[in-house]
Amino acid sequence: FLYGVPYRTAKLENSAPVLCSAFSSDGNSVISGGADNAVRMYQLGQRLPPHGIPQQIGNHDAPVRHVGFSSITNLAISGSWDKTVKLWDARSSKPAAVLNLPERCYALDIKGSLLVVATAERHIISYNVQAGAQPREIERTVANDILGKSLRCISAFPDTKGYLVG
Picture 1 (cartoon, rainbow, N blue to C red):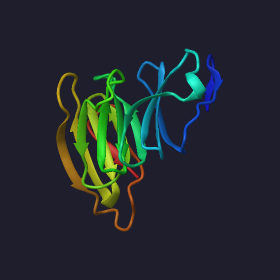
Picture 2 (cartoon, rainbow, N blue to C red):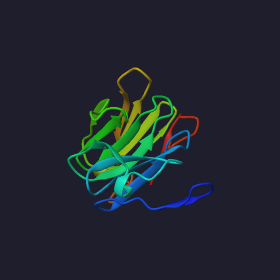
Picture 3 (cartoon, helix red, strand yellow):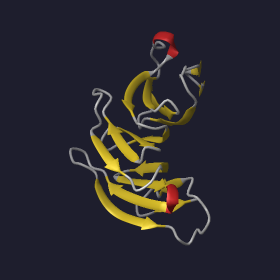
């Protein structure tokens, strides 16, 4: 469900539970991912799509755990339990980039050109994402100081000089 003014409430149907959602940078679109392995985009302020199901812009081989949107590249970003992060241009059914992860994606965030990903087994990977270029890995670490805990959330600092995890 989407709530708010001027959109009021919109009910979007999915064939399986939705696990994540995010607004595009301009606030005109919503991106979602879920247990049906699909990445979907809904254009706000337009008529509901047929049967209320948003446009599918991508797919993974396992459930989509987290999504985001890059204001720099205008690409949707999805992280999945299939151990990949994919960047999507809504005009193409093929990913613009695929990043292979050491484990299942549990969380991701993007601010400016900084994309940070937290995975199972406490891996944290950061990437530089620029328009017109493939994402470049900056750093890969394992949060060993969080013994016995899983990383479930990650957030990039607004100034893109770091991140916090939980």
